[in-house]
Amino acid sequence: MSVKNARKIGFWSALSVSLGSVIGIGIFLKNGSIMRNIASGDGQVNFIALLIAWIVGALISLCAAYSFSEVATSRHSKSGLAGWIEALGGRKQGLFIKVLHCTVYYVLFIACLPTIAVEGLFQAIDTNNSVHIGYIFLCGVGLIIFIGLMNFFALKASGKMQFIGTITKLVPLVLAIVVGLIGANKTHILNNPAMIENPVNNVGVPVYATSTTSSFDVSSLFLALPSILFAFDSFLCVGNLATEMDKPEKKVPIVAVITIIAAAIVYILIAIGSGLTGLGSVGEILKTLTTNTQIQNDLAIAVNVFITVSAIIVINGMSMAFLKSCEGLVAAKHIMFYQFFQKLRIGKHEAGGFALYWILTIFYMLLLGIPSVVLNDDAVFDAATNAPVVIVFLIYAYACGLGIYDRYKQRNRCVHVKGFLVAASIAIILILVLFFEVTIYDNIVKVAMNPYGNSSDGLFYSTAGVWKNIDHTILFWAIFIWAAVLPTINYFVLKKDSEKTGNNKEFFVKYKFNWKEAFKKGDKNNNLPINLNNSVSVVPHPSVNKNQFKQVYVKKFRKPAKVLD
Image (spheres, one colour):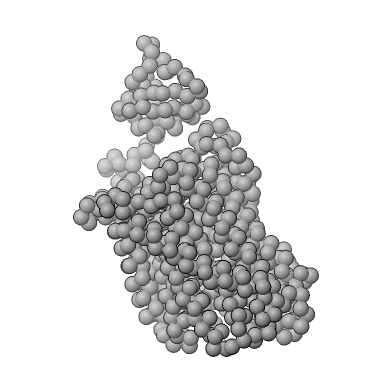
């Protein structure tokens, strides 16, 4: 097999990357925290509110994904989302998002998820949590080294692993759906008033008392949405694999929409099972298969193993997208110190993006891993994944807004898709409401009321009292500020470099077109070429930047220009 073919992926591999990245560890555990958020004062959970929360989260994600069926036609880009924003909003905006997406969003998950993945495995064999998290962190480092090397040297093999792993981790989820819906061992407790006083089911597992008539606060739905959107996040990571696919402008949006629909079906069915049984996790639902305590413990171990597999598949999918994002930055000279990265090679492979991948990964893993080891707690890793989700959904909303603006100005940079305006508008409104709820209410108002209360952060190896609400908020805003500062620093470093080398001058120098010089072909009076079918075919002067020429031409004449070589 040639190196070229080994580094290509097909539609099904791309779909498995997207599904594997979206259907991750969240659905195994998230219903518990969601049910806590929407529980009323007497402890009851409104079943209808639980379903509405998941449906709203799915609607936001689906509208955003569908909107990108139009936005993605703006450019065939290795940078995915950032490339589309550049095509619609301008180079500076695209550069900012491209750097933020790579150096903050992707890498934060790559730094956190390996340790969380290994935690699931240790939880299966170390039920007493006696192993220090430092050893778990080291195992997580080993895991990301293996995945990173495979993504670089054998992308196609990595895609196959993604496909097999995605199918594998669906097994316990499908089983949990069936068990939850049928109510094994008569464990359906919906509308059972006895559960309010004694919330334990027929097999001895503690439950949430669920009801279709209990009260609920609408604001509690928004408190639950961040956890839900975390479960839908990463549906556009396949956009960074665009150059590894045929016709990516068509396939990427299709993959994203199919991913959201498939994930929504799985999530909502599991939520129904959770509501019927009052159980907040897949492991607890599967425990209802038997009344035997030993078998219940064995099932819990099996679920933890599947959680590890699920997390590994998420890491693999995000690692692919992260690596391609790094390679795109280096190839385009859009990352500071690009001269150093472009000189690096491993055999026939350009290794600059690979080196950037590891520099960022090591930096963030140490930044988050050291305090986690000192505290012997995984709350830092869990908390660090919250801000990136909010940031990236805000970027989704902004990209949808650019698509709407493109329609309004009739710039025709995108192929129009029916229903885009409705879907994009819904996505923008709901994402903005969520954004202000999470930033203002969750991370300012609520924390101000109880700054030293115990944070809900932490998964497997977490001790109550170690990580406070104020700690969560400080980390949240630190990541938010860093996400603005780092791309800005990168911009000014590139600007200074451009003054010396002339590279990237399109970002910093306003170019004025001389239209007589811009055209090589025209009539004898140097008029514009003849307009054919509302478009023109032109050959610009060799000194003119073709992409910039297209943008200026459309802006000046409101007609697309087909630039010929």
